[in-house]
Amino acid sequence: MPFGDSPIKREAGDVDRHIGARLRGRRTMLGMSIESVAVALGLAADVYERYESGSERIPASVLFEVSKVLRVAVRFVFDRYVPAADAAKLWADHPLVPRTVP
Image 1 (tube, rainbow, N blue to C red):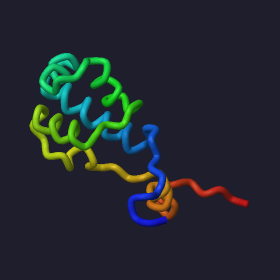
Image 2: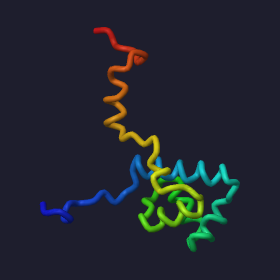
Image 3: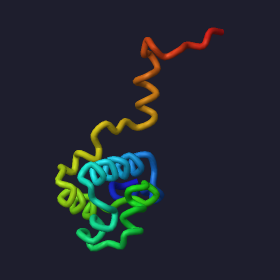
């Protein structure tokens, strides 16, 4: 498939839930309500709430704007994100992970 013609996953996934959790954590740290952030972004509160819950993918333009409202760099929402497959590899050889004995 040529560049740009590949199918894109449209439903929310692990990274969307991670982004939402990071946004929610920062918002609560600042003592802001969902409604106040939504108003600052020009969104309905229920739409912004779906972004925070990770049930809906957040558009890049909204992510950029919400990072300004929450006074963080866009990269903040990706901090500490490790895809599930990579996490399994990271922990596979960790000395504290119990091994099954055949």
